[in-house]
Amino acid sequence: MLHSRYLVVQPSNLMLDDFYPEVFKCPPSFPIIVERGFKAEVWTRDGRRFLDFSGAATSLGQAHPKVVSRVKEGVEKLTGFSGLLAPNEPFLMLAKELRSLVPVKNASIAYATTGSEASDFAIQLAKFATKRQVILSFYGAYHGLTGYALQSSPTEGMRRVSPRTSEAVYAPYPNCFRCPLRAEGCEECSQAVLEFIEEEVIGRAVEPEDLAGIMVEPLQSHGGILFPPSSFFRGLREVADRTGALLMVDEVYTGFGRTGKWFGIEHHGVEPDVVVMGKGIAGGLPLSAVAFRSDLVEEWYLCSGGSLGTYAGHYLGVLAALATIEAIKEENLVENALRRGEEMKKGLEEFVDRYDFVADARGVGCVQGIEIVEGGRPSKDLASKVKGALFRNGLLAITVGRHHNVIKLTPPITITAEQMEEALSMIDRSLKEVSREAGR
Ligand SMILES: Cc1ncc(COP(=O)(O)O)c(C=O)c1O
Image 1 (cartoon, rainbow, N blue to C red):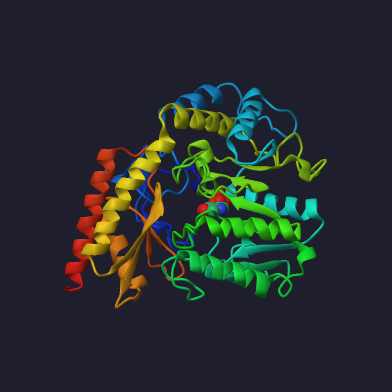
Image 2: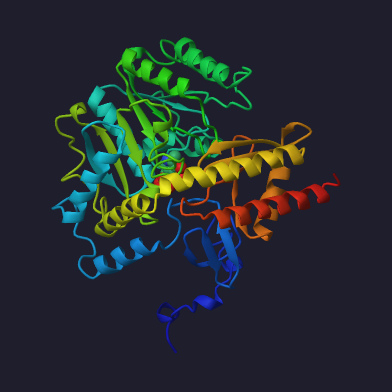
């Protein structure tokens, strides 16, 4: 008899209950085993089909044919000669492409592997370039799970594991629907937050000469689909200019077309000093990158040859990223994100009118969400029922936000008009079911 070490596990025998909560201590968002996907659709092992509005790793969705064929060709040639030692041609070509795309003039590029790492490296770069230590970030932000990225992500779960430090200071993030500073209106909330930063952060929580950088998402997704007005980002640019800190935008979620622009910050006409990229960059393969003003440093000792680590700028990831950029351009997917986003917004706004527990619809392009309330107050419980109903009706979506009561609706930018219509009717059906269950 073979020792169990040599037994080959038959995938069809595996059940989720065998793994959760013992082998894996953290439950998955959805109780399914995913088998395959194509753009906005995914299928489970038992043949169920879902439209994927959870939008985790990729802005193109699953298995885009261009990405698949490039990666297939590539893996026959090279499986992973590290960019730390010497570049390959696609590695160089992608850096040129990124320079032409990012909203930073003559940017330098460094590759990493995950969004967390890229955020972390951006913060390290800011500290190194400015010879200062303190980073200002925002409540509700999510920049990743590693060191500095985690410190700059003061959401409730993150703060439990992140070390407390005087090198991180925080401010509220504008929320046009439910302003944390109780201001009425979007511009007013943005203004109140900027005043808070001027009066309570700079010179109180941190001396201006100690502020290395401001790390900000152009739209907070985990924070609850919050999309502040441009005045907020213009204000942050002014704070950065006045204090000598760097303005760093985390485009891990919002980059590569998702918001209906190549990068989310382009909605606001503000030029950042550093852009952090991940997720959507490589059609689902692990790749991330940091683009930064070239004059910030003479030489950055952390990276070698443009790579921040053994797998950073991995050959297959870089090939996938070139294919992704090509697909976005050839198929006009930035435009598609905007058009589909308009259809989604129109549908979601109708739900706000129709269902009293849907209090707000917000977001832009393919990054939107609805806020669920009960008796006018945020309701995690009802939001979780909506999430469950969406799942039963074939749509994958998760809850986000301070009160876990915002349903995040982020389809890939390859979604078609027909699929968007289908998704909206799934959402309608789900809301109707929840409404009926709640006896409304
Ligand atoms: C805005 C933002 N930054 C950083 C990250 C971290 O990226 P990763 O999970 O690839 O480490 C995420 C992931 O959700 C994100 O949404």
